[in-house]
Image 1 (cartoon, rainbow, N blue to C red):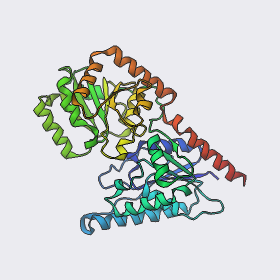
Image 2 (image 1 turned 90 degrees about the vertical axis):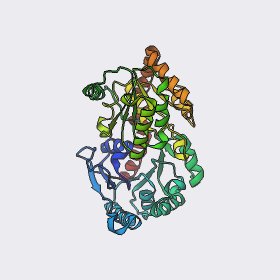
Image 3 (image 1 turned 120 degrees about the vertical axis):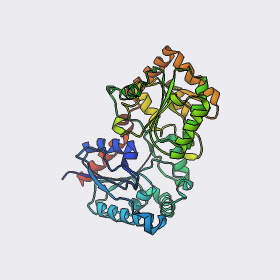
Image 4 (image 1 turned 180 degrees about the horizontal axis):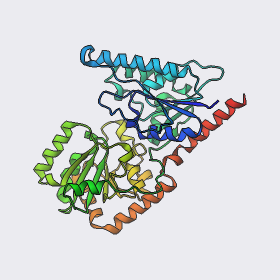
Length: 394
């Protein structure tokens, strides 16, 4: 029989590219079933291949029951579906956040038991989950039982070190950085036609993609435009806080750069690369507002996406950044709190095409050799193959 591989998270899978990458890669080892729980605001569309079985637990309506009760009902229905999926005896089950991981680690060991993998998108810091009663309980249980997982995966070395200490892990986690899948050829640009349709013909394009959040340093980037060449534009691809977007528009107006700050909105992950091709400089700043954003040198998708496209980027200093980005010279690092430094560094890249091109070429080369998901995930594939081989020999 074809081995069954279950991937589970109580969130929308389409919000997490590494999960989508794993769903595609693990199909070489068996039939992949993906259980997720999209929220009310998540797009109902899926971005996995048709061969990936999708099981979805939609969020409960909180218009009459209230948020807490709706969240509890949602968690109960997700738990019930996860138990049902585990009853099908998958060869491998992977949980990606505390809610799913706690449920997976509760499953009793069987004679021909499932390989249980916990892959944590975020750092297992209890403070990150304090807003949800369900998640507070889940993360405490998960940390207490994490040693029972057959494999633990994190996307960043510093997050792995934190997890070893916090969960008292006896075996080190596997570090799988959040690189994109191997991109052998660059796609055609959808960014340049989008700008052209709006009458924007600038060839100095500073680009940001991802969630519009307070920790992304976007206000400082807009403020730094006073140091840029006057013909440079700032394009923001993504969605997030409407209030922050309003603040950014108001800041652009005060800085006199309204026409030079453009909002594309969110695009499907399948189009993310197309909406970056053609950019001159990528922005991948993360402010250290908590442990999760402090330890994210290997966890930021966008940094590795810019590398894959050969786009030079301006990113922040911090834990692991020298090792992952500065030492191979594939990005320019700045103090995320220093507006002048941010602006002057962006300007340096915009005004020095030779420098920008050299950085981009090194980044692209590193993506092809190492900073791609196939390469990063290979140790996990090897562990899973060994597990399945042993199980088949019994």
